[in-house]
Length: 302
Image (cartoon, rainbow, N blue to C red):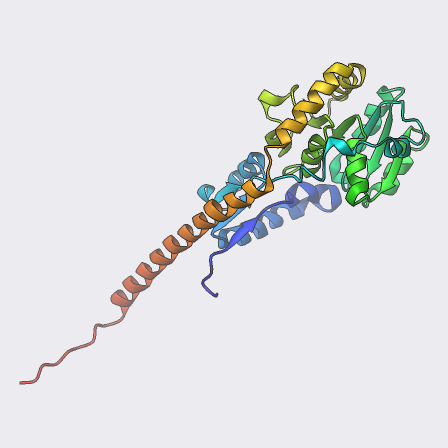
């Protein structure tokens, strides 16, 4: 209404979550809402190529108006130097010598965290720590009752930095991440990740980096996931090489560069689209005026 260009961002893949929380028939109405909102915008920013493909396939808006927003990670707050013996003792429930698997994030049913119970059944002698909170926590605690598992609840600041860096392997079973900021933070902390080959994760760990900076496993494949975790926890030299490679890769994800890209490229693109559509609208209005309103009659004096 104010004739100001609009940039929208799409972070949460709501249509994917709907069947896990409520009625599946709500998926189509949700897509209609998404289309209404994003077609009103001059530009839509998405965190990964996978989400861009999904929005294009759903015809959410014009394909050339969906651009990738390259996100960053705070590589100073999430750093290997925060590895801490006391935090490791806490996360391992007093058994710091055992391999420590960690997961950080919202504990929701859509994160596919029940998959980790099957993984831990196979990783005898290892422990797992869940860092975070959410509606699925109580059910997960019951699921892992009697298992070598610890739930810390929410951690923030330096405690969170220490929790990331004190683990051995970060496991991400979610198949619906629009990007996966926790994966960026874990790798920045020097902790190799084993993540499902799905969603935005494959933008962080592309095919040519799989097995170098971190691992991808086939979604739902327990054997594949366990094999890659075991390789990391059983081979110290391999773990150290991947830890260094993960950290080096994350040093490329600079927030200043990401913000500069939005300011100089994405916002300018939105302004260009807005001006183009405004020009087309003005042309249409002029044509309608000429077509349906009579031209004024001019009289000359004799």
